[in-house]
Image 1 (cartoon, rainbow, N blue to C red):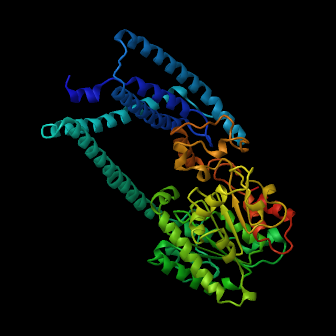
Image 2 (image 1 turned 90 degrees about the vertical axis):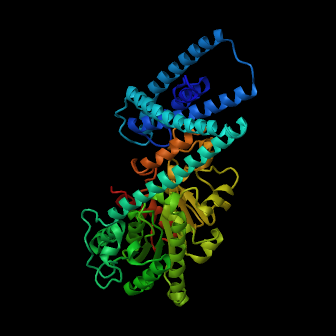
Image 3 (image 1 turned 30 degrees about the vertical axis):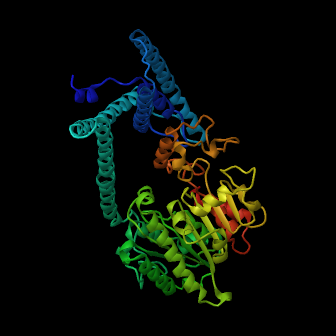
Length: 542
């Protein structure tokens, strides 16, 4: 057999097979959120190929350093013992995985009757593993052949090093400039087409207080899909009066889509002119909100504020991308930061022109990537407190600089999943209403569920056990979850796709606690805990 054939058709290595099995079994353990059997099959293949690569690399390094080779008579028994152990571990992990998923769903109040096929999981993982391994060996074959050709002209050691480096660079360029860039471009094209649509049941507004309506400076067609949803689902006076029992105002909602202007500054300036047109600066409350990648704003963050102030509010948001949040987080993070910073600066500049006694409360907020966008308008917590009247951030990702600094510098003894910073005088973290009770009233609130993968995903999971898995374990995170190098990183990354598929209070679902967040930061006169409880039920859809 030629050297090239040996590269492609060689048997599985001992160390690679062992670690591939261990990684596969580790992937079957529970993570932050429940998963389907199909997703588990894919996850098992990804983690197994990572384990195989790690085991094969360790084995190759060991053979290069240690010249000793065990006698042939010991090799076969060693393989038989290892394969037997691997088979037993795989069967045990697959058997336990069904119960682990049911326990996790029960913890979150979900239906525990699930479809879970261990043989299908194993089969899907095995097929995908073979595909990944074949691709990896083809890449290795390319490097082997290039090194062979170079070996005609340079020393063998040099040819191998150069050949490996060239192939690595080609693969990196291929994945970055061809696959990744092409995928992002395709996603952008698909998302831009989706941006032209309008959600079912959403209609052009008849109220002049809404962008896209009569006399608006922003056309209905320029709002984008999420902008039209944001405007078209605005609360009506009737809805507000049903809750308050008093005559209500029409809420002001201003939105500027990506197509409405060419640059972030122009969109921010257009938003300010639209705020002026609607009389937003005459309302008692003006909230500047960050959007996610597609331009989405959590309906609850607006509705809670509008119900609390009986419609006498104004909110403004600007779109900066077509891409879903996870894609925007990878490639549009700078655009998100620029959009939030530019919008806030433009609104605040106009707000400062008002007499101090006539200025509305200036609030900021956002969820997920929207919180990152709006947080980027400030250099520090002190800067945020000095230039706003309150802030509410929901499900903030690890990239949020102020969130990260506060969490890192939390008071001794407070857990990372519910930090206390300077005794809670200025900023509070909450996962339930009770966390926001008591004085003094905070100026900044961060809402974060203990099982929200958007909050806890970080590249550090590859090599570092996270603090939220230490004792005391946060409520909502199963005690059966453990940390495994590389594996937990991919588990939590995958959990992000299921963040909205769980009940409120878990994952990336926040529901009625948004009411308590606004009530802690900027309660209207006379607002009570009973009012918050009533509104919490309404916002949660109860």
